[in-house]
Amino acid sequence: MHDEVTTETSAYSTCGPARPLRGFWRLAGGFWGRRGPLASWLFSAALLLVVVVGLAASYGMNVWHRVIFDALQSRDSSTVLALSMLYVPLLALSVVVSVAQLCLRMSMQRRWRAWLNHRLLDRWLRNGRCYQLDLVAGPHRNAEGRIADDARIATEAPVELAIGLTTAVLSAATFVVVLWTVGGAVTVEIAGGAVTVPGFLVIAAAIYAALASGTMFLIGRRLIAVSEHKNQAEAEYRYGLARLRENAEGIALLKGEDEERRGAERSFLAVVAAWRDVCIQSMRTTVVSQTSGYVAPILPIILCASKFLDGELTLGEVMQAASAFVLVQSALNWMVDNYPRLAEWVASARRVAALDTSLASLARAEAARHGRIGRGDHRHAALRLRDVSLLSADGAALVAGAGLVVMPGEKLLLTGAAGTGKSTLVRALAGVWPWGRGRIELRADANLLVLPQRPYLPAGSLRRIVSYPDAAENRSAGDIAAALRKVDLGHLAARLDEDAPWDRILSGGEKQRLAFARVFLTRPDIVVLDEATAALDLPSQDRLMKRLMGELSDATVVSVGHRPELAAFHHRTIALAPGADGATLASDVRHRAEAGRPERLAESARSAGDPCLTQPYRVPHRQDAFELVALQG
Image 1 (cartoon, rainbow, N blue to C red):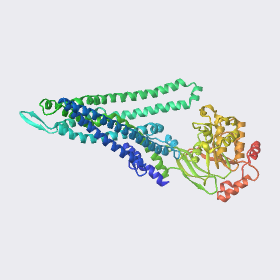
Image 2: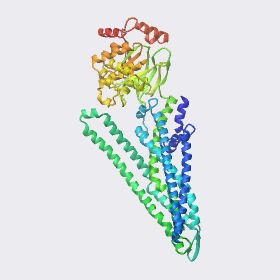
Image 3: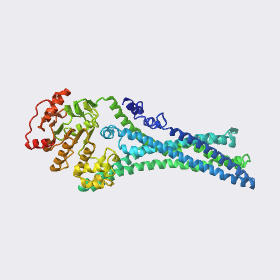
Image 4: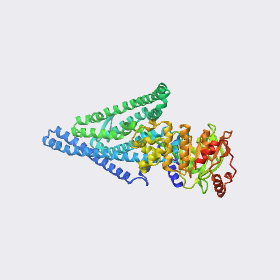
C-alpha cells in the first residue's frame, strides 16, 4: 500500500499548484516512462522518421521550383516536360507522408489519452475519492469535465505541437542553408560607404520572425487565462444541465422550470462572456498571424528583386529563395502560428494537473493517516469502534468518542435526531468518510454492503442494476428473478434485459426494494441500512425486514432509522445525542430476542474480551416487538 501511494503522490512531491505544467508532465509524461507502454516509443520513432522523410520531400519540392522556373525562363520545353512528370512522384510521396503522419499522430494521441484517462479514473474512483473530492476545498471543480474534455485536449495538442516544432526546427536548419546559399550577400550604401551583409535573406527572416513573435506575445498574453476561464465556464454549464436532467422529476413536480431556466441562463451568460473574452483575444492574435501570412511570401521577392533585375539571380533562384524564406519564416514564426493552440493546451493541462494535485493530496493523507480514522481487522467482533470521533472536511466535530462492539449475527439499530451524524457514521463504516480520529475494525474478510436511503441505479439494463456492484454476467437470470420476487418486484423479472431509464421509471419505494434484492443476491456478512426503508409503507417495511432477518440470520445488520417499528427487528438500539463537542452514544437499549440468542451474544463477547455486551438486556415496552423479534430466527 505504501509503494502504491508513493507512486501516486510522486507526481506532486516537488510540484505544487504554482507549477501546474510541470505537474502535468510528471503525471502524463509517464506514458514514456519505465511503466509506460512500449508502443509510445515506437510511435515516437515512427513519427520522427516520417517528419524527416517529409522534410526531404519539401526540399525536393523546393529544388523542383528553382529548376522548373529556370527552364521556363530559358524556354527549355523538354526540361519543363521532364520536370512536370517528376512532379507526380514528388506529389505522391508528399501525400503518402502526410497520410502516414496523420495516422501515426492520431494513433499516438488516442493511446496517450487512453493511458491518461485510465490513470485519472483509477485515482478518482479509488477509496471513495470521487465522493471525498466534492467535500474538500481546492481547484478541482467538475472533475468529470477535466477527465472527459481537458484530458483530451491536454493529450491531443502536445503531439501536434511537438510534431510542428520538430518540423520547424529541422526546416529552419535545412532551408537556412538554402537561403544563405541562394540569396548570398547584398551590398548596401550607407552614408557614402558600402556595407556588405552576408546571408541577408537569413537575417531578414530572423528579424521578421522576431518582430512577429514579439508582437504575438504582447497582444495575446491573456489568451491562456481567458481560455482556462472559458473551459471552467463550459464545465459549470454542462454540469448544471446534467444535474437538471437528473432531477427532472422533482423540478417538474414543483413547477420549478422557470427558476431552473433562469439559473441555466445565468450559467450560459457566464459562458458567453468567457467566449467573448476568447474572441477578443483571438481577433488580436489573428491580426498578427494573418498579416504575417500575407507578408511572408511577398517579402523575399521584394528583397531579391534588385539582384534579379541586375542579373545576379535567375527567376528559378528567386522562386527557390521565396519558397525557402516562407519555410524558414514559418519555422522561426512557429510560436506565432500556434499560440492559440498552445494557450488552449496550457489551460487544459493546468486543469488536469489541478485535479491530480487534489487527488494526490487525498492519497498522501491516506498514507499519513494524520487526522484520519484508522481501519483494521478484528478476530471476533463483526464490527468494533474504538474511540471514533468524526470530523467534517473543514474540521468541525460531528461525532465524539464513539465506542461500540457489534458481534457476528447481531442486529443493531442506530437512532438519533437529525443532524447528529448517523449517516456520516455509516459512511465512516463503509470507509468513504476518513476525517476524524480513532479506529474502526471489521471482522477479517467480512463482506460489507451499505444500502443508502437513495439507492444508486447505474445506466443500463435491469439485470445490471440488480447485480450492481457485481458485473451483470456474474448473475444468472434465475437468481436475479428470485431476488426480485423476494422483494415483491417479481413483475419486473421479464424485463431484465430491457435498457431503460430505470432511475426515472421506478418509484422511491421500488428503488429501495431493488436495493434489498442486491442484498439477497450478494448475501454479505455485514449489512448497513441507512434509512433504507424510509420510502416504504409499514407493511412493506415489515415484510422486507422479516425476510432479511430470515434469509440472513447469521449476518450482522446495522440499521439507521427513525421509525420505532424498526426496533422490533433488532437486538439493540443505540441513540446518538447531540453535544457541544459532537454527538455521543447516549443510550444502549437491548431487546429480548429469540430463546438463547442474548446468551450466545454475551458468550461471544466474553470470548472476545469485550465486556460491553455482557450486561443484562433492558426489556423494551412494546409487546408486539417481542413477538416480531421472536419470528426473525
